Length: 390
Image (cartoon, rainbow, N blue to C red; front, side, top):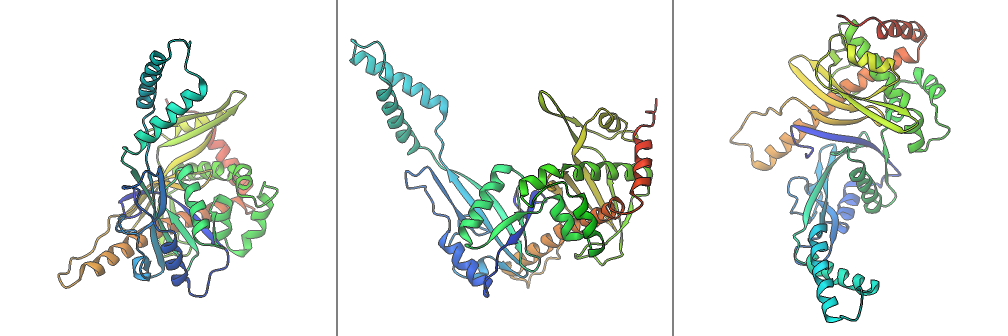
């Protein structure tokens, strides 16, 4: 799903490094230098490079207009790969080995070096006849905020994007916006010192930060579930974004829980699908030692609604659904202007939903890092262990 789709899965990064004076020219030169090159007429196995957001066949990047859109720089990473079906290769190899044995009846089996040669020859022959399969991943770089939104939550795909971004834009890299990093970004100075105290990682290494601070996602989900069950679920916009600070919105959890449990045999996952009465099933699972690592969050403001499947250990947004883009058709508006208008509206809707999420996160940390947490924790514990309704 691309970033312009009605539903998208996405992860965000901070751009690390010193930006050049003329960023758009720098980006244009880098994209042009590392543009995608087709392998349709070559025997190559793989090709990776950049294409334009609107046309994945266009990799020219002749000027800034191909990717620069107001506050955003938007482009797409394309990867084409040929793959030989394993079963086909195995069957043909067996046939070729049988034929070879008939030609050499004095031998009991095909020598290993000959088998390897047969396999390599067959593989190259088959590979040249396979059509490359394209895969794409959209990126939207908000230059003012220094945040890159990547339209994927797949770990391997995100690793590829990180590597290609670093290789393309020399001197710049992507820093994952993991839970503690996002908290640092959205919290004001009064809570920053308290945030440092609860950081359980011994360094700023990203993998260590994610591993040692998994508690953050667990406690956030538990708090959000408790709030949904016991409060009106109304909050105030407190994070920066399109909405004005102080405006009211509704946020709640509903279903789609994924829980994990660590034990001697390894990590086990379980799912709870569908609405529950006072989260009875989820509360029982947590009492048994499980932790919520994924859950559906809903946001409502005025007549608009957002839904996201939050992956709590890294704060990735799966199946993120925003209100539909609504633009009045104007016959006087040329296609290029209409395309840009749709892009701006889509990005605004994405930013609005994330602003509401960040505001909910601020509400959580205002309690979690404040003096009222002990009392709140006691109330949550009592609610968590109350008897299930008959």
